Amino acid sequence: MVTAVEREWIRRNQLWLFFILAYTITWSVQIPAYLYAYREDIKLSNEANTAHFLGLLRGEGHPGLAPYLLLFMFTFGPSVAGVAVTALVGGRPALAELWSRVARVGVPRKWIAIVLLLPFALAAASLGLAFVVGGLQPFGFDPLVPLSLFLPLLVYMLVCTGLAEEIGWRG
Image (cartoon, rainbow, N blue to C red; front, side, top):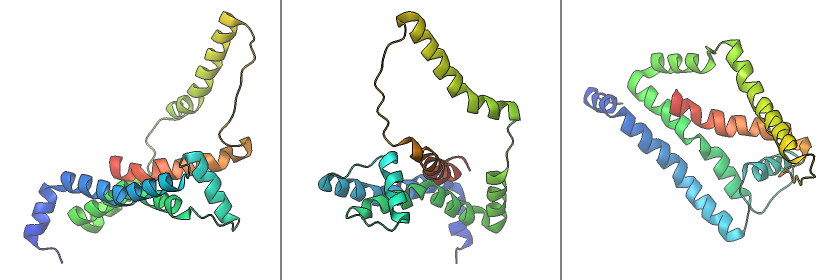
């Protein structure tokens, strides 16, 4: 049970407490995982992690499983810290308000369309400019993952990059 004095100290120092918790949770596992991966010559990237997790879903084991799982689980450090500090400072009402903000979409549809379409428009414009300047030239393209893994990689990135951190950093 947290006393009134402790609760007041937590309230006054909630930002520092969040940063300390977020980095401690994340780095206490990620640093050893990266050191292990380096020692075992395991490539750690979003693409490699996606392929590895899909292999795990198929029941395929991997001798370097530990760093992948640890990196995956503890990218959630900022969100875990944010939820913990929110609970300590404001209790259940603050947690309910936090979850309502997570689920709320307050962005007009035109901006969602711009965010989704702008990368395609910029890519098309740069390809068009390259064609005008240099003509149609052959180019090499070596994707990091097969095209069939695009959707799983997108889901992995949304969960492990967006969801894992944004609840903590942005609330």
